[in-house]
Image 1 (cartoon, rainbow, N blue to C red):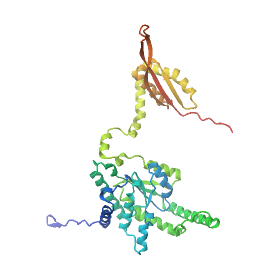
Image 2 (tube, rainbow, N blue to C red):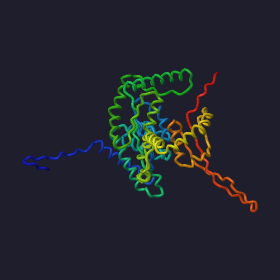
Image 3 (spheres, one colour):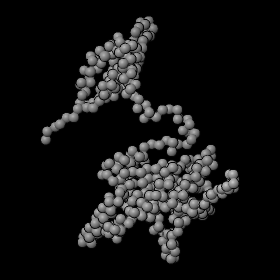
Image 4 (cartoon, rainbow, N blue to C red):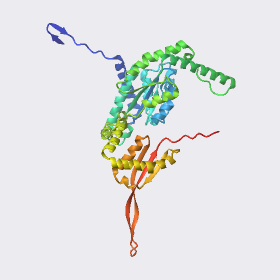
Length: 403
């Protein structure tokens, strides 16, 4: 209690968050079951987990194969809804019982312990509620604790630095409804062909895919419940909100952009400390053009004679060869010109070509040249002669052939 003058203020009592409390109870129950039935030393979760969500019709099934390729994940995705049709879940339903949140969480976490998922996995359709999001946070902390406990042990690789990516494919309500109804029409047409030809398998016809109001309801439930819950994870994990409303090729570009390498998420702290002083490629590229211009102006101003000699060599020795390779777009040139004995001349040449839009690299080699032969002993004395190799690449010509 705080007193100010004659007024007394009673501090507000922070009421516990029901979702957090419920998640803690559920997670404690699930974790105890895992430790008892799987074993503390066998809780090997995947290094990278992509928690994929999206409104009905957002294209999770369509884009999942591309995300798998983009992240180099070979394991099939874990579809949360499919777990509810597993033999264990079916026994629970057959006994007349509902599948509770603790059971759903346990089935999922147990599934993630499958060695097939060790290097990475996509989880489709989880989390969808605030309680599930809180369970996810606790799982992440538990994985960090496991990592720390086994960091210097022989099985450290089995307890990797966890990478959680919350990934939401976004479409607006109109697009979602149109896609749901289109999917329903396609399934009905497919099943009709199967019935007529007796060729193929019947697909599930969802009533919600043929009723516009039901489609709208599904979208709004996702937006008001799942999407709001997922947004609570923005500050905790890397959050990918991907515009999935465009054509497929554009959506794939959006996915590539979102899933660019994030070392701060994937590497251990010790590894980051070891390499963090090396600048990022993006940082270098940003100023590359300005630095190139400054160097070229410096050559013209401070090394005029040498710069003119290099330009002369480019015009008379290099360009004739490059012109011969204009179709292929690549010229390999070997030079013995003594101008390149000056190290700065080599850099000048590369800078000139790069400024002109070529991609140029070069290096110096040496070869032995016989200089003297001793007739009595047969001994050959050689001198070392420098040679300079250059690779010049550029956009080649497009040849149009007639029919």
